[in-house]
Amino acid sequence: MTFNSWEFLVFYPITLLLYFLLPKKWSRISLLFMSAIFYLAWNYKLIVLIMFTTAVSYFCARIIEKTEKKAVKKLCIVVTLIACLGVLFFFKYYNFIAETLGWAIAAAGGGTYDFTLNLVLPVGISFYTFQTLSYAIDVYRGTEKAERDFALYCLFVTFFPQLVAGPIERPGNLIPQLREKNKLTADNARAGLWKMGVGFFKKIVVADLIAEYVNAVFNSPETATGFGVAIGSMLFAAQIYCDFSGYTDIAIGCSRVMGIRLMKNFDRPYTSQTIKEFWNRWHISLSTWLRDYLYFPLGGSRCSKPRHMFNIFVVFLASGLWHGANWTFVLWGILHGIYRIVGELTYPTREKLWAKLGVNTKSAPIVILRRINTFILVCFSWILFRANSLSDLRVLLTKLFTSWGSLPETLSAMGLGAAAIIVTILSIIVLDEFDILTGYESDGLAVCKRGKTSVVWCVWAVAVAWIMLLSVGGASSFIYFQF
Image (cartoon, rainbow, N blue to C red; front, top):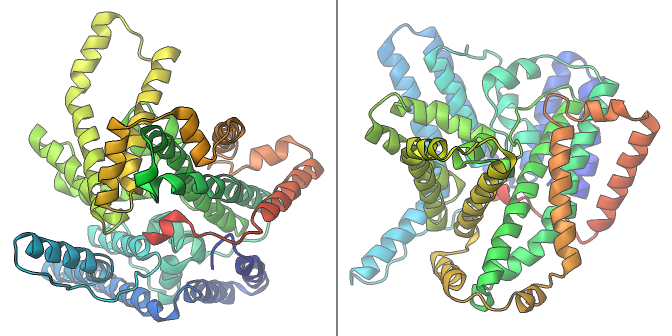
């Protein structure tokens, strides 16, 4: 069941009715039950895994809080890490390691071996694993109290809007909200539905339409030209942003109708002037998780320069591996690590150079140039991210640097006319404005209040009708579901 499916159109209203009509205790149970139904709709067999990681993290956290013995606390957190990460590594990375090992043996002349297993990757495993780990680690650090209500903790892990693709929530934000029952208010309904409308627009009207052109390049790299690869990478930048932030908007909107506020996950990332700023604006729940639970424990920036650079590299390598068990994702993470390291090492020199030249780095022309430069670097990295394999990546990069071809012929082959390009560009600009108008603090409430209620609801109704009209071809999955 996806947000952009007819099943969800039935599921969500029923969930709201149960949540708002039942008494406080039973409304929470109903929300847990419906979240379980939501996950079971993907693959009922895999719910055992999420139950296992939930149970281990819950009981270990309880023991950590109760015991005074440091050795027992350490043992419990180690058990939690091994159990949760063990499940993640086995289902997500076993075949990757097995394929790499088989390739290495064959390359060394040792024959052909197939160590892979027929494994199904559980939907959302990377997200809910990190969420359970953050809870257990916070309890171990003493920054959060262990939750006594097992059903409430289960709801924290399985809360359906953010279960399969985030945001990766923290216990301090979500658990207190789930503990209370909110009343249905006009403000929450307007803000939530508006946010959902924006998310559906991003996904169905923009991301799904762009996907056709992106697939034409990356699924057939041999026929692509250098222009095609360059254009394809920029279109993929728009596609993945609209797809992933669209999911986040829908998740935030679904929750907001119930009076629950999920954390912000995107902040207009393509307006960033540096790669560092980009990662402060892109997939915020993941970048802050890696900062708090990996970067800081490694020493952060409060160490020697070489160690600081090493810490940055490890974080981005982990980010690449988190996204997928494929060498293309590993290289993508490494590339962003190199971007960040080069940025850190050259920052003092660049600042001195700007000052010596008398350049105002906050002037509009410089800001625009820095944004363009960062966008180009990010788009180049998306080639590594989107490539289906290392062999495809080699072909794509070869075409990018050696065989540009003809731009008109490339656009024609991709099916891209001037109108399509203009509509795509305008859509991204409009969506940036949506992100301003529907910022997390207001969730679109200010927009709703600025206009007459009737006008707002009419516009929203038209948007829904438009989205449904464009989606008659069937629901497509969100990109980040595969992670």
